[in-house]
Length: 203
Length: 203
Image (cartoon, rainbow over all chains, first blue to last red; front, side):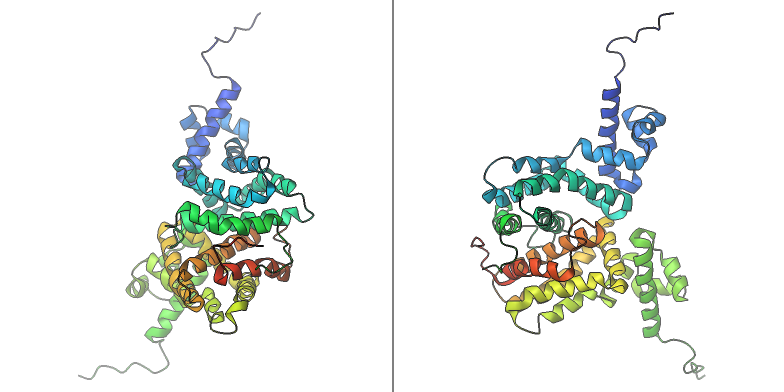
């Protein structure tokens, strides 16, 4: 017997289904946080069965890791390292990073990742691994010096802290400072961490 | 009628009762987080009635704010600004701050405050207000320049981000770096934010 042929254009294929689940998961993690997100609700939002979500992603942790990878705004930061002069990387990196937080479509997801990492040790481990492999390793590669990974984490953790203070905790006067003023203050310090002499005192 | 005199030494006075409730609240917030802490359990741990907790602190938010104030490890950082030369404040501030995170008795509470702030907007507002008035304002006063509050928040948000990356997310190689090496890297940058020329490019 010939199996019945699947009608063309009627059902989404596996790739589209997987994408639909990931899109629903991104919305759920951003809106309900890590603890508040359930496989059941993500499945319902994507219009699929729970079993299919588990088939593709195995667990909520698996779904979170895939959602992080499928829409990585942080990955864009890495493209920066492949363009332009490494001596101006500090200012360019700070500017692009702040733009991401100020884009309303993205800041919710950035916040969701931050909240998930702060409340779930498994989510924290995934965020750390993702930032490490997708952002820090390529950044370190572009710096090219012996202690490049240390440089990348010094720069990255500074940017992270300042963005949380400005956009999440809304600490003043940091929160009200124009973006370009902040770029001017942070840019030289980030550049120092990336390419300066770490063993020499600053000016 | 003369009211019966309260037996001396039998019952704790109001100050002791309040302190016992705060001590129980600090343990509860550190162990169970902000969301997991209930007035009922804090009252039980302190051996008092729930109504008494509400009498003193009005709400869980009130209890959290008081617990933050009653045992403020961050307040110690401020004492630093009153001793020694302001030109070496960067290194001293970084060293003392890292010591707090590395003290096992304190790091749990630091983490509890961080987690509460990241999951509860009201807790975040309290942490921000507390750090502002108890740490940043005195720090800014000791710096004494026109944009001292901006300087204090640039330094504070950098320290915050780096400690979260090192002690919470455990990002390598930051997490395994000896404390004094990190003091040597961060000290000059924190000093730059506190007293350097923010409008000049670094070396």
